[in-house]
Image (cartoon, rainbow, N blue to C red; front, side):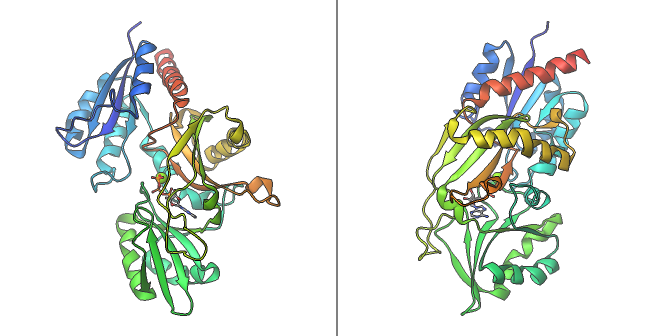
Length: 346
Ligand SMILES: Nc1ncnc2c1ncn2[C@@H]1O[C@H](COP(=O)(O)OP(=O)(O)OP(=O)(O)O)[C@@H](O)[C@H]1O
Ligand SMILES: [Mg+2]
């Protein structure tokens, strides 16, 4: 039988030395593919390379893509078109752009707000709608979190705090928590208008005080949990209740296998209930689920909590999940093998 070939596609400027086979985020995965008898190639992506890649990618059986929603200031429009074309020619592409649109954009938080993992979440699909409804939403609770439609690394994620006495708002941008600014309501609205350009939207999520308990990332390969990540301090973590505008810098994330007893309840509910509910809600067949994706949760540790609400969804990542737990490597290789074999038998 012909040796199967896999492309590990990562972002790189033209002439960049980045290489997935040696990069520490992908090296273990590349080695595992080689051990299983696959051919593996690192492929760099940037928009200028898209025309040549349209042909080059056709020689692979599978193309595994790690490119953020925003890279070098550019969105994924050209990349997504390229991946759709390659996929339509029978190559296994993961994550498929259609799946990214369904579960990898922040509106998934609104679409699944009624699931047990959901919390108070609103959506504004136009600037007028945002100006009309957000002030009430903010006044009611005093603190909200706004998220742009597609982003990563906290870009376009803002903690918004209302000061009723001064009638001002304080905004803290997740990637730069040290630069909180206090502005008037009018200025605030105008600053957020740009998020509605190009069919953009804003998600308005409740502020989760449970961020103080750290966050758990539940990593999945297809519909199965393949590992966990736990980070004690993440973005927007306040130094203390009396200093709401000061945030602690994020700490390191630690990885655990899918069998880690600390999160066995999360594995159970994710595989048995939430992943199937998500698939059902978004009409995603199991074979379309990404080979590596994660759902990130706040953890409610109060003894009197409703157990169904112990884990509350912060967001889902599907387009560029790296690094990932070493335990996921074996699952990814098996999942890719299964896809290639089922295609060969079709
Ligand atoms: N509702 C919330 N309550 C408290 N903190 C939040 C909330 N939403 C987000 N955060 C904080 O902001 C960070 C960034 O938010 P989020 O994960 O939604 O954005 P992202 O840009 O997709 O990030 P990533 O690069 O991790 O995928 C989270 O890791 C968390 O620390
Ligand atoms: Mg994200």
